[in-house]
Image (cartoon, rainbow, N blue to C red; front, side, top):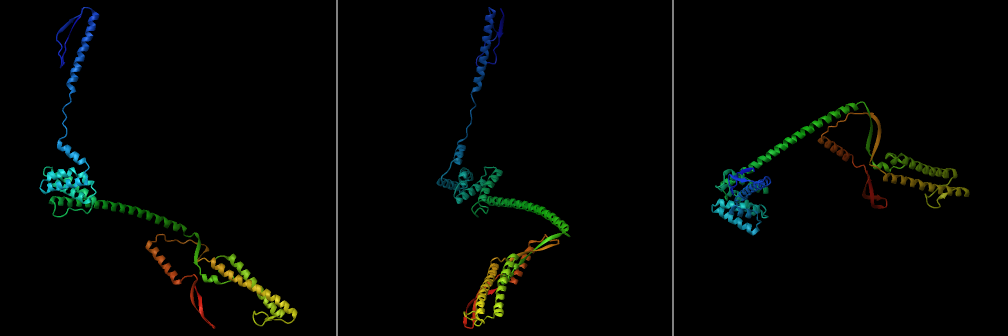
Length: 401
């Protein structure tokens, strides 16, 4: 029958026998044994490789001081504990132990930044910046960078902050002055950038203004020689509205109302005057004592009856005329308007100046106001005054326009 030899190599845990020969009696049995041997050999090799790589390397954990610093920095301190820790750090700084003060203040820095006491916060951050600068165990560039960051926190809280004189190292005063100057330079650069931007905006607006001015000039040139509808606003005097016969209504731009009052007053007044003349000259009845009862004297009984009827008609016309006069004046005063717009019709269009400055416009308004004050108020004013009569003196009202 066939024979085969197997070498078992690279097996760290169990070494298979070398140069072993297996004689197989029958072909089927030899094939089964061959397969089993191969499977056992592969399984042993895989198991040894997994055992060799299963054990992980020893991990080095953080040191005890690092753990304590992390716990102390992340923990929230009470105000009493924060004050005590700050005093310990300041005491270490006073003894010249700047590294110890730096470490202690670094641990409580988050609590200092979150402190509600501004004086305690400023004091802690100030000593932290000074201890950073004086800690010779740190590299110089790191000390300067971290101290600048702490001073930046102090300046963010108070832009006018400065370390109190005579309490800290010269390095802190020099660094604080340098940080303040650097911030001032940054602000100056920002202001300069804003100024440049404003100048650019001003230049753009000026260009737009010049273009609008040119367009306005072109438009005025196009309007030259054309017609325009002109309206004029006139300031009216209230005293004119005291004149009857519809004058106030005509003056105020109400011709229909003025014509109505004028017609009524002329009609009633003319009728009363005609009756008066008829009674006096045609009938021959005259009044001897004015309007006193029984003062009408007529020739004959018939003329007396006719004269009495005419006299009564005269009185009615007189009262109607007087009522028309009063109604005319009262309605004119009620409906009076201080200004009136008058249509002047079409005129040649004139170029207008559309580029007046604000100063010129203000000056024009002041001149217009001064002219109005010089002309006086066009409204009716009532003032108390004394009244002298043949029978004595009294109080009265004076009208001023």
